[in-house]
Amino acid sequence: MRGSSRVIRSGRDGWESVDRRPYKEDGQHFRSVTRQMLLGEDPGQTTLGFVVRYFEIGAGGYSSLERHGHAHAVLVLRGRGRVILGRDVFEVHPFDCVYVAPDATHQFQAADDESLGILCIVNRERDRPHVIPPRESGNSAARG
Amino acid sequence: MRGSSRVIRSGRDGWESVDRRPYKEDGQHFRSVTRQMLLGEDPGQTTLGFVVRYFEIGAGGYSSLERHGHAHAVLVLRGRGRVILGRDVFEVHPFDCVYVAPDATHQFQAADDESLGILCIVNRERDRPHVIPPRESGNSAARG
Image (cartoon, rainbow over all chains, first blue to last red):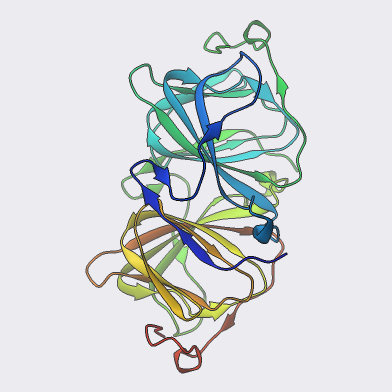
């Protein structure tokens, strides 16, 4: 199936005709995260071998502490926060890029007083994540 | 080969340790375009089935008017300009997304007084573009 070229406009409340969804349907290991599928999920866009998602993490929130066999390509779009990569922690700002290697334990955290918006691109075909209990991560900055 | 997780910091003059290169090595069918390979090109990042590039088009500049069998996923990061998609023309602003369908003739143009910076994600394996003479495009806004 093959879709048409199109522009998806960005507005104050997100992208037009793009739903803001829960980050995940279940679990207590994340906080204040929404997800918007920007490109590649539409049935007309499957010649793209990847999907482009936008995640917004509210102030004080965080994504799952997890690992998986696929890599992440991330570009920070808005706000301020930090990323856990294995035993390291890095502050991140708009337009910083993050490469999350296969099997690296990782977590994105918004600042306490500011949300964090990230673009995250992944292969269309990929394995499911494993959630890691923070105490098993060896990283005292991990939350969950 | 398998690289390590890393953060690539964005600064005033682009991303650290990312070269700013010519857009293409040859041709007269584009103007004032530079290219930076952000993620996926590094030999340690080939488990990503895609590459993430950043193109900056100077004020009054434009990319090649071209088409190819692979699709483009584009997110505007900076500036102002427009995109030609077949016979249509759309103004674009930061965070607008553009899906360029397979075989669609397309061109990104910066505004006359402002540059345009776009993130463009493509499959790692893809065909080569064909440059289209503007007069054959059926779009009076096409340049080249």
